[in-house]
Length: 197
Image (tube, rainbow, N blue to C red; front, side):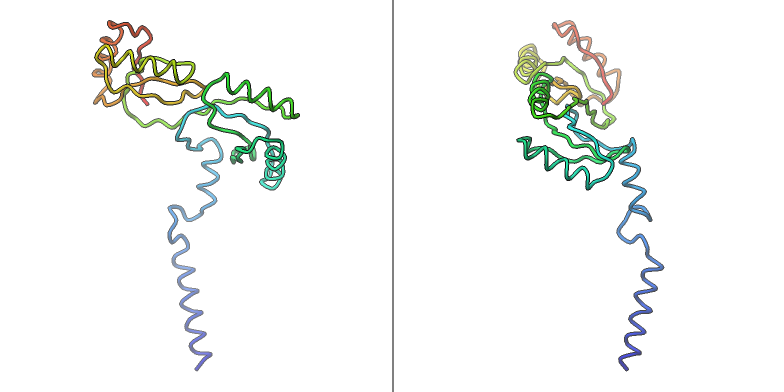
């Protein structure tokens, strides 16, 4: 009796494994999705600047290198997978000046850090760009000026290479955004532009 139950259970498990190889996955192979994202199609959700401490071919090498980086005081170091292997990076750098300071500090510790720009994926919506600030206070000044001249709702987001972009979203189409940009230029925002984000 035990052999019969065991055989029946094995047959059910084998059939399930054969008939549903991708149960719970969007692709029949999870490796295909990871490889696609890692090789040029990595989806970034936030623009910004990253300090790259180094690249390694394998994850094990990257883990060992990250341990060295953290041991020397760069506790926010992360590992990011890419086409060419793994990068050990620090993200969340607001301005290029801060990035240069971090780079200088890292070089004193023996790390040849490079600063690289990260661009977030496009959302597919039309936006009016009112300007760019080198740092958060200068970008906030643009927001305050926009509010003062009758353009409430301006927001900040990180620029890919440091600093902040001031934008207004919510336009139905390009021509509506273009009319808004014309009005913004008339009110002193000389660098205003339309952008498909």
